[in-house]
Image (tube, rainbow, N blue to C red; front, top):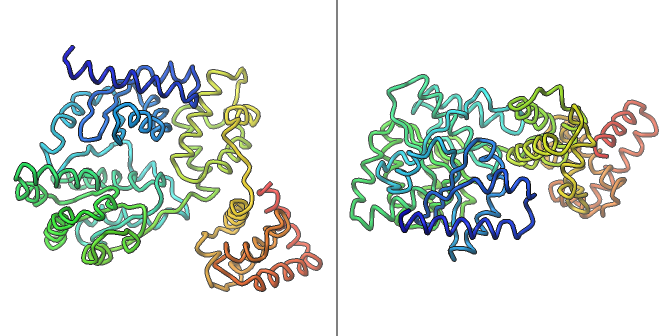
Length: 447
């Protein structure tokens, strides 16, 4: 064993000890999935950890923040976790030893992410259509394509899907896939080694550049200069650029105006948290990858969709937790609501006050097929106005929320507007039986 291997083993052993001491991981889960993982390298604040199978990868990903915190405590510096399956061992070794030997292509496009297994709903349909269109019309439309939204909603999935579709349609096209953090570190390394010109030239021959989490270049002047040069070189030569970020370009503080302007010259599309129907479809797809969906009661899908639909990763983590628990700790032949509630005991908490307003609003949006932006907007079309009035009324009825708080959560409306909406609903409840039925159905979903 080399000195470096001994060091890595020691660091990982101490990290695992700290993980266990947090008591946030079940002992059986720890022994089955965490103890078999190995720290392959630790360079430039990036910890490469390999695991035997995809199920291990999925379970460890669910605890990424916890692992990073324990690594930070062990080595004394902030560390980013990079998880890979054992089969990628040789490639990972090359990656860790020289992150920028192949400067333009630092990431491998994941073949498991494609348009076929991207579950489409109202929350992400625009982004999916835009991504598919760009992949089939490389460099000719929507350049750059900028996809933004919170973490875990499918932005990286779409980037990989674009790459895979381009490979399928145009096998000879050259593709580069980097993260914003990769790009920053690449500029730093190239500057230090006096190879900055070579770094920029490495992007010149690309036909497609995919950049994940571009917000990480914000506030870094030298990186801005280099990226601006690379971006202009590609776009001006009709080469496609696709980017993702956690927010719209103008909201990325520390990003130069000239770069924001370039990002806005193409097409900006966002991805929101999945609505109820999309969450159900995502759950069915994730479950079908492991067991027959008819072995899971519909009540279970509803329970998970209601409590874990903040993002796709949360839904995926919930499926992993459910399957793990049902396989190891349940004697039932199928997965019932009872099993699900036992599996998530302590993880599902009742929401109150402002959060409950959000839950009620989301349930009403799902019922009417609307987005959050539509229901809080100034739009007064009948369908949207009706949904808005019912949501306000239910916030008042079910949680007795103050009129002012309700108004703030529905587009900063005045309390008098909320009072008027509640009065209108109460009058209709006395005269319209169909209206009563709708209110009861929505209340049933909320409860």
